[in-house]
Amino acid sequence: MLRFGLETALCRQNLSFGTPPTVLYGGTGTVTATTTAVPSSSYPITFSTTSTDCSVTSEGEVTGINAGTANCQITATQAGDANYASASATQTLSIGKASQALTFGTPPTVLFNGTGTVTASTTATPGTSYPITFSTTSTDCSVSSAGVVTGINAGTANCQITATQAGDASYEAATETQTLSIGKASQAALTATASPAGVTLGGISTLGTTGGSGDGAVSYAVTAGNAFCTVNGTTLTGTAVGTCTVTATRAADANHEQATATVDVAVRALVPVPTLSAWLLGLLGAMLASIGLARSRHARG
Image 1 (cartoon, one colour):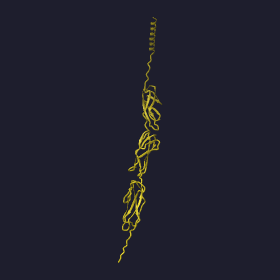
Image 2 (cartoon, rainbow, N blue to C red):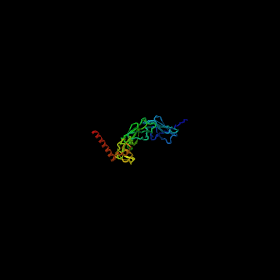
Image 3 (cartoon, rainbow, N blue to C red):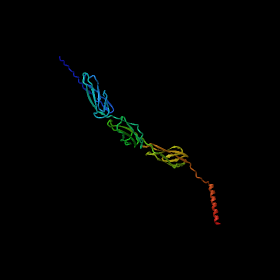
Image 4 (cartoon, one colour):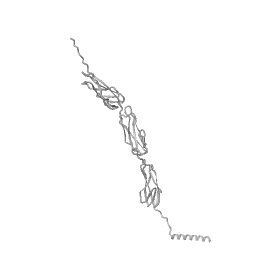
């Protein structure tokens, strides 16, 4: 008797990937896949890759190693069992460039005609292969590519600095801005003068200044010893015996702070001119007449 055996063919199953995740350089994303088999094989779907620009865990978590286009191929595999044949499928990803953010340091203090240095750092680790450079379109300041800011005009929030780092194979380019206020500068040393430095009661002295900066107006005021002198414009008049202090003030202007200086002026008493009494004048006249008469007799004799 002959016996014939029947072989039962294994059922075929197909794997289908889900929507490709977005995976950036240094970042992660998860791939998913499902099977068409119902019920499916008794084994889980696992993932692998031979690409050098990415890695993937057996559960599907992809890590970007290098940015590029269609440079990461993921293979999904499900082993067969007694009912289903094994199955595999592939999905190709592009590893994107990572974004980076620039962060400015503490704003420097920059004054008119002065300098200060801005700094910035990147969140990228490691950063791009290019340095962070600085620029400005503001007319009230200038900045070197290395970040040295020079104040051109004083003002409030009048100097905007842009930090830029170019992108590379792994990172996108990044920019950030920082706004500075250019401060007013101190004036050069101001000196107050009085000519002459001392006056007699009722006398006058001319006030003036040397030094200072900018175009602020100069004014004068008695700030100590008010009983001894008065000031009108640049003219000081002595009103009583003593010493008065005059403060000269050069006002602030658009780019300079106010500056002051002081000068002391001594007021002296008038010295009286000696006078001769009528009696002394008469005696002196008599003496002169006697001397004249004696000379005349001597000449005749």
